[in-house]
Length: 193
Image (cartoon, rainbow, N blue to C red; front, side, top):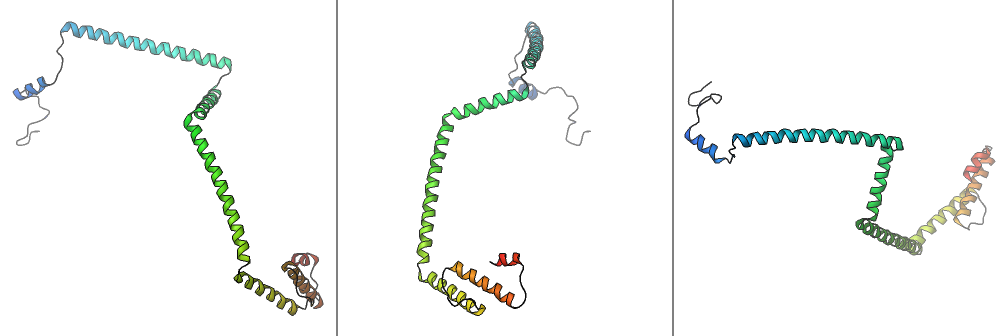
């Protein structure tokens, strides 16, 4: 597997002097045989203790589940209790209280602002109704209604409120269709009026 100029990496070669210096640079404690035996014995002892503790813990968890089952405590009840406790903790926390106060204050400010905007819009609409443009528009609508009323053949007294004019126009339209010999059913008359 050797190519020209490159040694085989899997080939075992004796350590060179430079390799020995690199290996001694790493701080690996040199232990005596007695220390190695003591540490090995301690590792075995610790592994046994961990295994015993795991068994004891498993037995205690099983006992706990049995007791909870006898008491009627199930996973859902525990979740509810944990959630209730967590929610209570959140509500009693100072950050939550400050946030709640801030949002309440912001809500009050927003309500006041909306009320003010509503008042301003109402005032502006009232002011707009008094403008010459709106009055001109209102006059044009009235004259159009009057023209329609005279063409349809309604009563000679043209005037009154906009609603009265519309009702009389609809009534006149219904009369003209009945004069022509086509009476509208009562439902259609009700729709038109």
